[in-house]
Amino acid sequence: MADIDPEALRKAACAIWAIQRQDLDKCDMELDDVGDHYATFKMAKAALACQPGPTPAAGEPVAWRYVHHDYMGRRVSRYGVAPERWNGHDPVETHPLYAHPTSSDQETLDAARYRWLRDHSCPPHNFYIGVPDEFSGVRYGPSEVDAYIDDARARQNGGEG
Image (cartoon, rainbow, N blue to C red):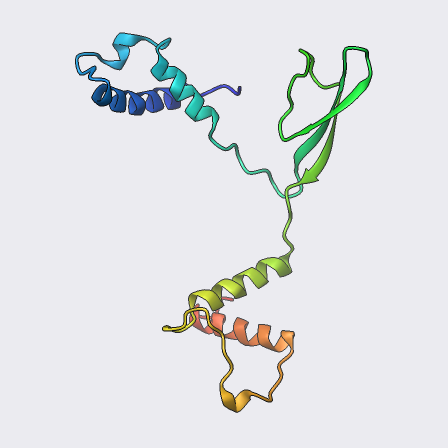
């Protein structure tokens, strides 16, 4: 388990203790009276250990293949998102399997267009994108639609795309 910040541990333990004092009728005891070996601190450590870690940067590995030696010295592969000891031994090799996805500039722009359409559609049919009857035979290409959306976004944002 990674090192836990003592201040974060204390805050989590205080929050748990507040609930325990009420539920377990320990109104006459303070958290300092029980010491850090008490179950409240164990619960706080467990809660903090479950917090998600930082999101990896785009392109960084997020899953690996770990190679261990079994009891007969054979190479055995295990898969996971964090290195783990197996039979009391650290992996002898690690190989990245999957990388955190990257997004291209085009994907980022397309996502912004989608969010703009979603957020600025008119009630009562939010996010219903229709074509008026007078345009039923008119066809627009993707680049024209993108240009119209970009123009509308720029006008709404005062010239910023």
